[in-house]
Image (cartoon, rainbow, N blue to C red):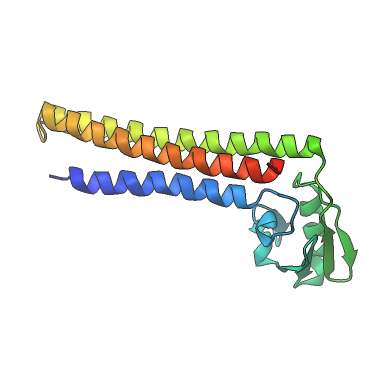
Length: 186
């Protein structure tokens, strides 16, 4: 039967949605400087959108400061523009090919906005997991119609898929809750 391969694939895809959420959450500011903060930023250079880390080196010289060393002098302006328009609340200070980003103290209002963003990221991940579940369920129903599996086997496998979905959604909720507490300083 091909269904055991499908379960592994479903698990991998659900875990991929969780990993994407963890990556998104790492990019959210918690009041301390982190190179992951700039990971989602795309810079328009050489006629294409490229991740910031492919056109510059990002480092953390102090707890409340990021520095971006742009490799090509002609890319300094596009990098600065991308950082300003990323909606991270950062104000770049350009010094030659070096861009400094002081990390301001988070206001209560900004903390609440970031907490809402955590919720949006978590919901996006849950939707991705539910889509994987839906695909798995449809595949099982198609296998049953083709008489590759019995009705009992389909129901058992659907329960397995549902359990994987529930477990992954619990992981997503736990990660989002942890990040919210970190942002709100609780």
